[in-house]
Image 1 (cartoon, rainbow, N blue to C red):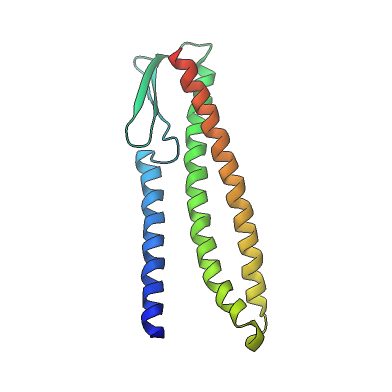
Image 2 (image 1 turned 45 degrees about the vertical axis):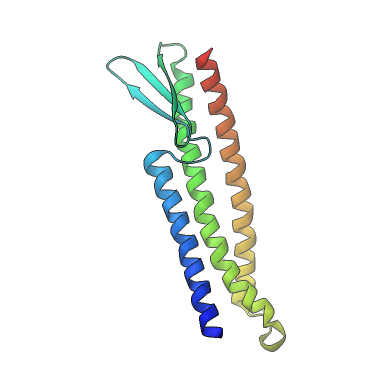
Length: 156
């Protein structure tokens, strides 16, 4: 019975990791992340196309002049930062699950085995990874708010 449960746990973990890797790949290649903002810049026509939406893209094309072009360069930077924050958030999620799989059994067996140095290290790393996940989630939220503001300003 125990062997069946460990196989089930293994497959659930592998499926979870596979989904996380798929989400990371989609974020990097197709800009599928919360908000789904993206841009395309055409140097020949001096136009930038701003996109919004994860699967169904809404876009607007704007001619970039000298004065507001800095705003669109910042927009491009925010898009890249949002994708990086999302990827780091998912990567830290994988790390947190891995650490939890080490900490929970050690906690259940604490009376027989006591706490080892590696268990304490895993707990500290879990705390740091949760803190960093909150940090990247906050950064992602700030980037999305900025890109929403720029997109709505471009529509007006």
